[in-house]
Image (cartoon, rainbow, N blue to C red; front, side, top):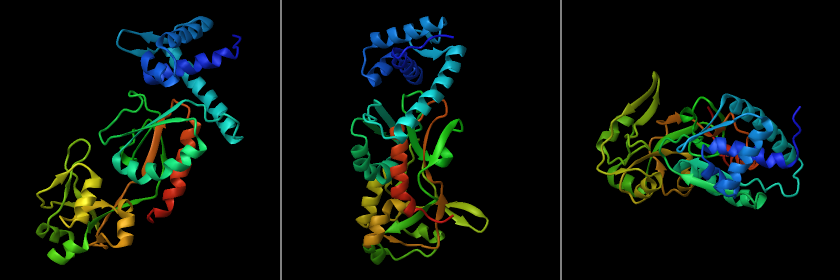
Length: 306
């Protein structure tokens, strides 16, 4: 049996990081090392194992069959180690390097921002990077530890953890708008109103959908303004420019203050919960588990009954 000395754990971590990032350069940045140091670490691992674990070209890095098998077993081992350290709150537990997340804008505003203060207090030594974008992203290929999307958008080969309960999409408007244009009673009456159009991350128009006796149906709504940002859409609705189709939980504060009103409370559409997801072939960063717990604690009370 091959003897593994303590120094090998850092080298093995470098191997996993290179495989995840598919780049020596990106792995070096994440680990805070030089590309040369990472290359030497991989060479030491392969030498001690007596086999090639990575295929290298000038443009990419991929695992050999043996390398993939080794990575899967190492991931389980590092996950167990991280769980043990996290459980006992060992001194220096924050020294786990970088945690990189890719989240869409609504999740950043509703879930991430309120959790940052508590997270940074508990994990002050973790370098947390949040990339906010609504386009579809391959988190593994682009070097992210985890992503955040609606449940139905999570790739099937990922581990997904629900962060909220069922969401609800509603039509909201300001008291000023309602006073000027009246209140629609049914989705069909939206054709007589100014509706703020919303673009998805892939630039497709977001359909206004509602739950009906025979299932979900969509309606075409008029409106001269099209936006690709929920925050701007909410601002426009607050200013009385038009009606907005948004997550009820996203405008929880505005509804409570009365600056926005759910104009058709009996007409809405249930939506998928927000999920955090990460590769099933990668150990879960202990700080990621902490962030998930904080978000769930803060948001589950806003969840709607199924």
